[in-house]
Length: 237
Ligand code: ADP
Ligand code: MG
Image (cartoon, rainbow, N blue to C red; front, side, top):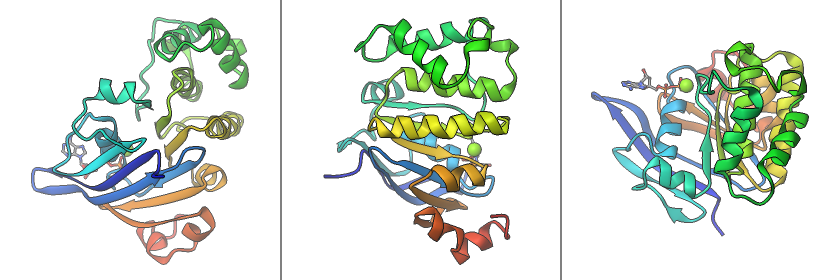
């Protein structure tokens, strides 16, 4: 049986510059997979390719064994793929609860949307801001709501692009727990994150991208001491 998300040999060229050069990765159901790398490494570009916002010059993307390389973003979403963006994408004029409701109503209707949303608000500790409009939230809280929205849609593969940026320690901790709960339900979670503490704590497997190439992959304990990784980060880990 293959992995839930398979990315094979993806290449993206921007005006002669290879933003991605043969990038390959796997994300398993029930696991949190980290994707790290210095700024400009190609992480967000790889997310764009996976979710269908950018056509690669070469390579393949498959979800649940199905080749989706030629599918547009909406069709991939119907195959269970959801993502957040590096910048916030909430409906500013809607309350936190309504932002979550919109997403829950888009997902498969196994239970009442209101009930799903109440659970997410509880799990993320958002009770005190449930009726606050999204554009009044501090950034870290906004990111939690965004992740809540992705969870509400019940996807099978989740891509999170720097979701912990602007979160305080309590928010990051809750966030780590939420990711684990999500994975425990069988979701494949792919996490791009600069907070190395969070990555090393919550990920089962970590891939390292540098200048468009995957330079290492493995469990956090192995990645932490990988020499090519240390060199790419100039000792930042
Ligand atoms: P990361 O998310 O790892 O910081 P990105 O995927 O945003 O990296 O960018 C990878 C490389 O591709 C960078 O050199 C960036 O300048 C370039 N790049 C990203 N998006 C575009 C674009 N739309 N047009 C041209 N170059 C781009
Ligand atoms: Mg990025």
